[in-house]
Length: 214
Ligand code: Z5A
Image (cartoon, rainbow, N blue to C red; front, side, top):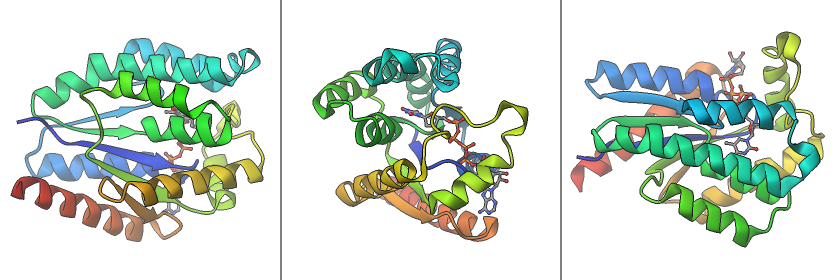
């Protein structure tokens, strides 16, 4: 049986990475085979692209170039890591996926939606998320949390952008959730770690129950 594909999306510092590790452990303890991956990155090829896009090295070539690079990285991660894992019945948890391209390159970057949709369709064929958790919180709070882990590297290419842009992205994720309620669940990520964890577990449990009923 194909594994479950769950993606974690939202703004910076929302707690995605923290919760994904916790969910992975919980599901493993319950006997699931679990693979955690991230985007941009995951596969060796995509990790190489990660550095190029997050350092800002590609910014001068424009938003279309960045969108293609994110799609190229996603294609490699999907083909090398995600599809083989799903095919072997493994539950895949992915830290960011196609909704980040829709929001960062589309809503915020202004890339032509038809161009983005065409790339998304080509790249995610056979690997569409079953459940997407959208971590929602005021960008001020997310950036404050993210700043605590920047250390000497400082903010990346996208964290540098102003609050109005971050606010646009927050709305972009909420709009996706409103358009695709069967796939997306919005998590109030401004709560305490424990309370966010409870909301996440509830969403995953509800999805798993429905999936096993069908
Ligand atoms: N990007 C794109 O433009 N297009 C695409 O298609 C894709 C990505 C896939 C990847 O950044 C960047 O690439 C991203 C979008 C763009 N832009 N940015 N910036 P990344 O992978 O380096 O980082 P991120 O995804 O933005 O994650 P993050 O900033 O590391 O945040 P997080 O994973 O959501 O949060 P965290 O690391 O779990 O937590 C951050 C801190 O907050 C940490 O100290 C936690 O202990 C703390 N925390 C977490 N939850 C809580 C709660 N509930 N209360 C208090 N403190 C908390």
